[in-house]
Image (cartoon, rainbow, N blue to C red):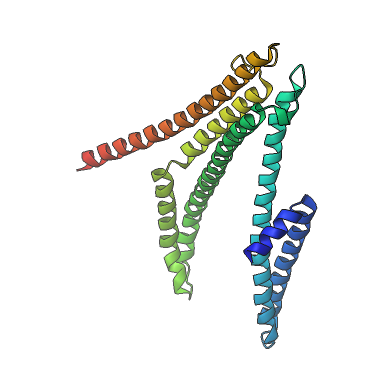
Length: 271
């Protein structure tokens, strides 16, 4: 199964293929929902649950397949973009040296790939932290707002005993969600990751275009000096990327240490 997916992804990771599979995925979802509704209406038809299960299995398979193909396509697109950025070094030279004869191109491509991997990691952290923060905040607001309505519903004479538990369950869930948001700094992680992404992307563009003195090597006429300056530019870029990454790690560690110290102080005062 995995070999089939790898072969299919290596030969067909194109936007048209991804779009076609996405349409088939949506059609399978619509068929699953429709079959489920028909099953509820015609409960005496024993063949309908089989169709529901089959459509659900097809939908899950297509979701997983599309996710893997999209990941492979994005990876190939990123590698192609990195290769183009590395080749830009040759176009900015006064004498366009062929890339196969220039040893700087692989080093620049490797450095750009390392920076892009960090950018992708920080983007994932940013998206995850942001989504969790927004969902938790919205959930807390909704649960807290519904609670007074449930209290009024509880005063009504109803035959359903489970309704009486809702004014207790909803505030409890809202309290748990609020505690999770308070305990884990999702907002801080989101902002810090966004800052790191912006800094890394800005540094990457500076390196590609050579707009700063540390990365500018295109205006040097001597070939040996230009090659040496290009090597130093790669080293400077790696050092700067590592500095941004290490500062982010240190800031995260300091935030966690401050939170632990604050919680320990509050617990000591309560005791």
